[in-house]
Image (cartoon, rainbow, N blue to C red):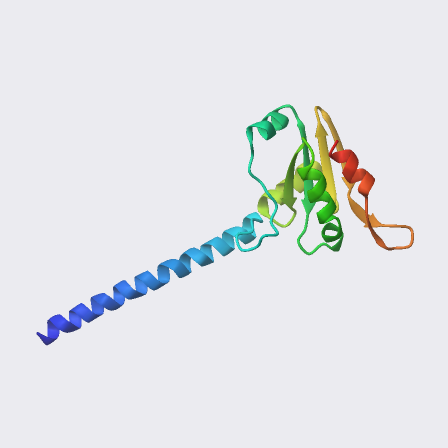
Length: 153
């Protein structure tokens, strides 16, 4: 009887450990995936990335923007509100690329981006790359509102 009870307790410990480790493993996996791909699961400050039928048509017709950013970039942070407002009010599909992720680095190479606060406006076969925030003549950080406005027309 003692042997059977010991065996039962050992099996129960294994099941308990498995049940505890499964959620821990899932959480760690999600956090690592989030860091690698630049997706935020735990914050309401994320960029939207789902593609609708209208947006798909824009992409096929080469009518879209790619906004490059870096989470620690002060220029990106000061322009974020303006960028998000203009993108929401525009018919132009906008994608956001974190320059520190694997996919973001590929886009940086493809579009030859030199600084994080850049926006690429693709219109047909024409491609325009601009900084959406920079230093003015006095060395103060400014948001390039005209660049942003023109990119979302």
